[in-house]
Image 1 (cartoon, one colour):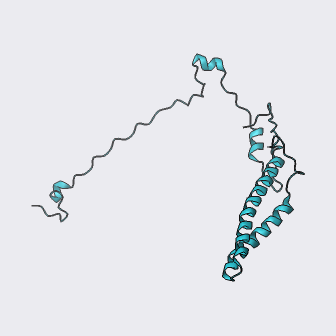
Image 2: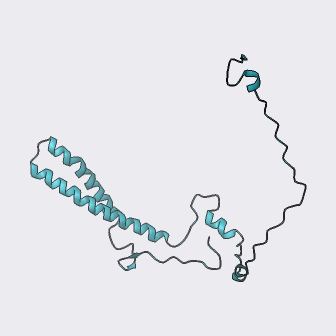
Image 3: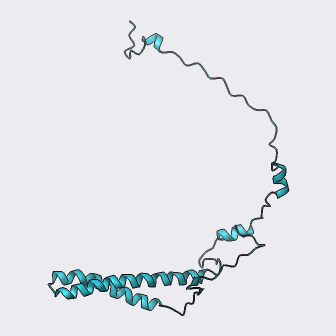
Amino acid sequence: MTTPQSPRKPEPVAYKGEPLDAERGPGLGCFRFQMIVLVASIILTPLTVSWNWPFWITIVLFVTVMLLLLLTGQTMIFLLRLVAAGRSDGRRRPLASATPTVGEIEDEAPAESPPSPADAEAGAAPVEPAAEAGPVAEPAPAEPVADDTATTGGNDPSGVRQ
């Protein structure tokens, strides 16, 4: 729960010891190009085997797929860090939201004061409002259960007495 007395300013996302700069590193266009080449290579590699292309082409495409998986994965992680850096400024209201967010509700709620350390050391229990004193209803006694074994002759389901 956030308190209005101590607004917490989030620290910027660090990348290689410095705050993350959106202008440095690969962008979304580079990522899209990598994904297009990766998908084309993934589709083309098994087809080169079925089309009986030279073996070295299949090996080159396979190595290309492995390298592109590494590069696109690293680019994806970098772009996710950019998104995190853009959202580290704090909460914002969703654009199409007509209702308040949970954070706004928490900020509007009156802050409950925790018990002071002196009260906790003295062993004082928190004071709760007393319930209204009124007559307490006693539970009704249970009715005796009828014993059917006397009329049916024990566990005999036919009901004939022996």
